[in-house]
Amino acid sequence: MATQRPLNIGLIGGNKGFITNAHQRAIFMDGTKRVSCAALSSNPSKALEAADAWPYPIQGYVSYESMLEAELNKPIGERVDYVLVQTPNHAHFDPAKKFTEAGIPVFCEKPLTLNLEESQSLSQLVQEKQIPFCVAHTYLGHWTTRLARHITQSGLLGDIRWIDSCYLQAWMAIRSSNPDFKETTWRLRKEVSGISNCGGDIGTHALMQLRYITGLEVEAVSAHLESFYKWHENEEDNLDDHFTAYCRLNNGGKALIRASQISIGHKNDLRIEVVGSKGSLSWAQEESEKLIVSPLGKPVRTYYRDPNLAADDFLETLPPELLQENTIPWGHSEGFHDAFARLHRCFESDVRAYQAGNYKGADGSKYATVEDGMEGIRFIEKAVESDKNEQTWISLA
Image 1: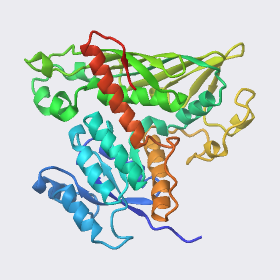
Image 2: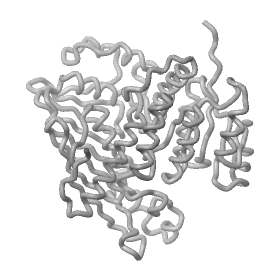
Image 3: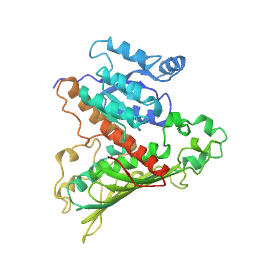
Image 4: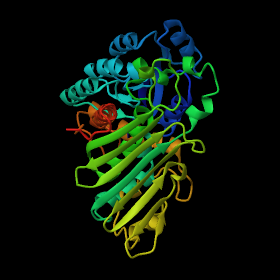
């Protein structure tokens, strides 16, 4: 079999920080992709300095516009194959739009855009171009998240009645004593972060876990957005640091979607419990190697990656692709970086299919799509509307 050339990836933003390092590890994990170029800062001189300081030679650009122009002039095989957008929220839309228009696939950090109008415009463009587009909802990449999806959508839990999906952190409380925090954190500024800080940042992860695992949609929401830390004198400028949304689902079930950045004692605590008529399951990101399932009238069981799962009396059968998705032997722990790598791996497959003229579109089973990103923004906007109207029920239609 002929060896495939590595895909070239361009970075937009993300000069420093843990999320940039996580993406880099994910990109290099399979040896089939590499960073070839970057526009790492909105400051032109800093962008070039950061590219020059890269651990190995890459092409630095002063802006993503100059990157796009120069890369399009390169022959196929040398130009960028997809771009990774890691900018703050307000700067997602324009680079994603410009590269999509140029026929270059986009892997974009979440939330997708600053508002629903931008998301709808981007979604329409992606559909018109029939081009791969991924939104970086990391936790969909965990193998156990995919097992939870199979269990739930195969009907093994029966009719889904209740879901509790939450993401709890403490970083706002921890940093509250730093007098410079307000000035150095863009998430506290509405013009950069959007209309919701906590909900938009991590509440969208809790929503995406719900939608991905169950296949259900939120039809209506009644929400509380609270600001326990007052960073700005004008009350209207204080974005939420605590987010609670009670939801009606499209199957008649109910859900609670919670997010907090002031919950002292929690680190990166994303978790979900799905309750059905025949059983329930629970999963937690901080213990992502295991999935706990409680079938009605049967012993509780804990699942890990195990080749014997296919013979389990409750699971009955597993899709072959689920058993074939592992990159390390059974019994070795996967984690956050492996989840990121699985998303990039699945996206790479679609990018290669797109370049070969064989791309059939993404169905959302491997990574979050532009439509998923749009639904996240819709949910946040409706939650904010509900909060401003005394928590009244607001339809997402």
